[in-house]
Image 1 (cartoon, one colour):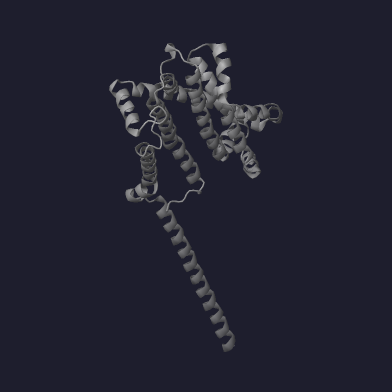
Image 2 (cartoon, rainbow, N blue to C red):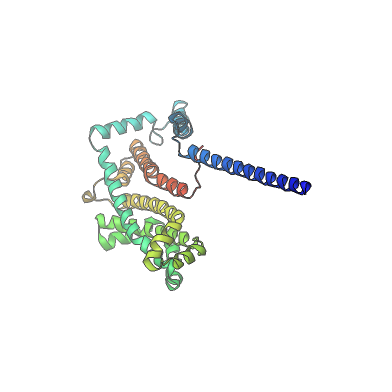
Length: 308
């Protein structure tokens, strides 16, 4: 009996030790997860942000400027009508600023581009949902959307001018024809990647129809949808530049595309480079201010973006 009781007591002690050890393991695991959450939610020091994100593009810009100036200084390209110096382009920027026209060039194009993109968003989003969810529409329209997406936007400028004339409506029509297919196709791609389990779970919980689309389909399709939005903006901006270059009229004002065409007509390479530089800056700024934060938010909400 004594031996049996001793063995029983030993077994109980072993169970207690195992439970304590298991509790310690769980506590350690929870502490590790808490530490990971603390690291991810902590604010990144400015020095680290500067070194990792700000300094590299600044170095790249500096290298481009040095190489550009070297081509002029060493007479690799000694014809200013073919390649102006950085100083000539900077002088063109100063002249436009002093004349009060620089911000006008930018605002004319940016306001058109953003308004046209918002219209494309309002049309492309429901169109993408309908094509993604209705088999007949997918079979009938999806190939057309893919074909329109591959069609160069500049091809729509001549018919748009004939149909609508030289006005802002023509500009917006070209933007819509360039951006809507990209937004719709991006949403269709996102919906196709939604796991069927999510849809079944939503139906079980009563999320059907518009409620299921809003609460289940759209959140799950966000990565593909955001990619479509980003591509849609790129097509909007390129379509607008093509329309401004080809269709010129005093009633339309002078946007960046028209500025580029004016530089070509006057054989002013410094004006041409100014227009190219402004078009590039606006495209980068829109991406950094709107689409990059949106992409980071989507990735972070899915646990796919980890801060170091």
